Image 1 (cartoon, helix red, strand yellow):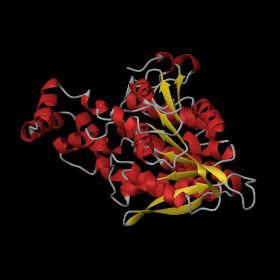
Image 2 (cartoon, rainbow, N blue to C red):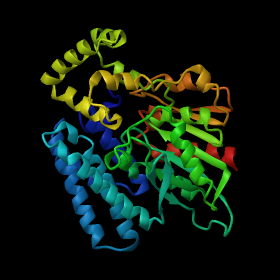
Image 3 (cartoon, one colour):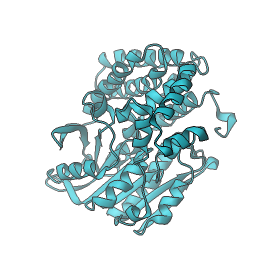
Length: 399
């Protein structure tokens, strides 16, 4: 249950959270207060179809306006269109038209690409195994000619759109004089929707190639590369820097030591026992019965398993069990590490403290509270405050 009912717009938790994300992104020109508040008045609480219609309609209107505009006006319209489409596609696997999921994601991606170009972003392709990972490199204004600047790698979470990475670190990095890289790892955005690359637990196999690529860029100071991770990247970032020691500083928002707890806590005890016993037939049969009678259960399974590219419930739950950090792995982390600890963390409560306690490197734990309007998972209503504290810490580590 979410706290602070006085600021609720919806009883539906998903719609409430996404509304808060939209409102928080106003600070980065990814939303407009009047547009958000007007859009949500057209939505029936808990109804995903009306949610999609309202946000998709806003995205289409903004994209149309952007096409007829130029300069900074077009940039801001494209940013807001990307944010609106990102809100729209989130619940589509829970509707009668799930085939709209990837096309609506693509509309958000295209709007973001247009905005990124107007923001000065360079489209890049990062060599990865037998393919490449897509991304955008942003350089700060006034960077010294022939000089090198620190680089911030912004690692998205399990379902964040590209425009969310702009809000969650890239914009502030550029403003503070850093280069910033927004990229898609396996299971994220284009790497998932277009390349069918699924999540993987050994994220050092992703960040290693990203660092290799960064070191080829003459603008980048290879001794000052920071890695910021949000949501499920609160697991991926510490996992990566435990093995990839070319990263100079790491941020986990929040700290995540065991991704699977957010899955297992919703399972009845009988299903947990079947999973632990390796009873595939019994587990899948019981899950199938539950999903047959619950559209919400079908949506949650479809949406949460999509980035893993695994259809069988028993297999996807076992895959998620691999996303765990033991004390031995955490002790391998050498670089200074910042862990955020938002009050009322919904998905991985208590894990920020557990990660912080297990770290043996220079470390800091930063709390975000309800009293300052910055509580809950990834501080949705206070990204500017969150970024201020993160980058103030980075200033002391990288400068």
